Length: 289
Ligand SMILES: [Zn+2]
Image (tube, rainbow, N blue to C red; front, side, top):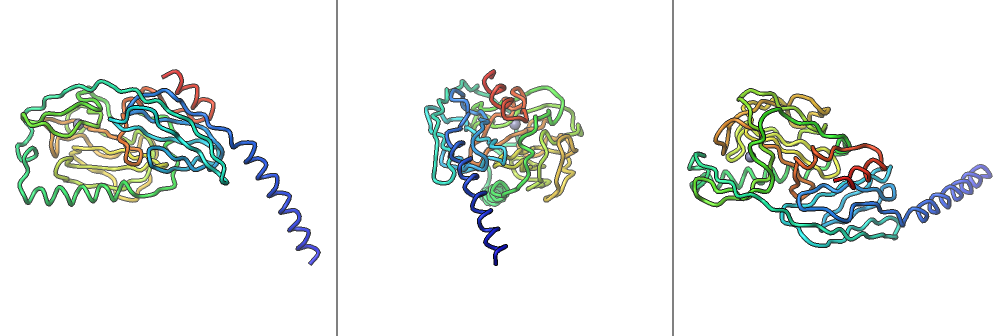
């Protein structure tokens, strides 16, 4: 009994000092406050704090690192809140607009521009499948790595451009297109868990989705060969498949997209900004961009 009391007292002391650490930390929130649409924002706050951003929620790591994304058309000033133990701290992030190109695409199969009733049913089924894959929660922390290029080739399309397919305006383009011959290897730009691996989706053909953790996902489209399976854990640089022109494409290329929860972000920005590992590097690198 005495031992038990002793442990309880010890426990209380530990608990008090822990909550003091939390109080000492709760004013900490380092995140860039000037950025642009399509960016990924990296920041540092209290370990394990809950982050609220654009009506989405994420959690900081044990070291207090976190990442959030900004979609193509998000412009203006938005609050980012970090909360733990009933305390919260807020930063206001100012997001500048970007100019997006208009991109004319001629020669895609006409059925991918004006799908039939049956094809619309297929499209809806497949988009539900993709949404389900992107709702998967994984515990990996590969998102903290610096990204590498998933394939080498010519940049033939960029994030954000307004697409006009065979004369008909379509959705904006969210990916980075890398043109290279069919069969060119595609590797994982960041490690992660495969959450979707399909040989033939209507718009995107051979398609792989990889979860990098913290709500960050990469999609790889138009592949001629899908060489991974759902559930497989990949290190950065691991082979995923091969470049192709399956789905709505006019020639062989990889379309690499990324989203943080419901925000589609610019993968080219990620490649250019690098992806440092330590907290201080996080902030330094962000401020030079
Ligand atoms: Zn594309």
